[in-house]
Length: 272
Image (tube, rainbow, N blue to C red):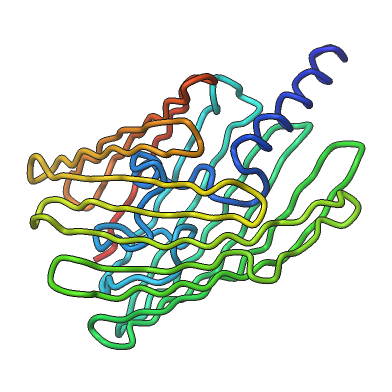
């Protein structure tokens, strides 16, 4: 890559990240979450600590590997994610490692998470995040952040959740930029044993509110389809999960109205 392309790629990456709510936040998680446009903090069908450290699921043990070859056609914005969940006695311990970016700009996010089912209908959770950002020939910083999550079963079909992310609002040293605090409220409606509809409202201290709607439906015992739309990020999404014995294969596509599409793939092994 020559110097002109290197500089152009650098500024394009910064532009995209700033316009997709930049900096150690909800960008690419897992195809099941991506397919719902990142809706689902109150979901009883899935659990990803980056969305909500708390869950009402009590038996959830798996290991997942996620790959996003590029974002909007740019291999400079590729990412990989490894997630491990282990549950015992109503508690879930989770860890994940996410690598994002390229040789000139990269982010790493390490998460340790704990969810505790207080009663059958209430759970709280905590995340400890270690965020590492590196821009070649400029800066390399590591910052910790904390997240808190709460979820409650309101009735047989409806759950509600609240999440506060980046509670300590760290500053990225000489980058002179804060990791903003994000607050999310969510409602999930289990309209059948096979389906769920999620409504999330997301507000960052530095960005406009997001209203997200996502759904999933099991069309076959081994096939689940998903979809979603996000008001602030100007994209809609869809995806599919295929189960084969203890393995889940999932795929999602996020279509931005201007920038194009982003595809994600994952394979998960269920340990139960």
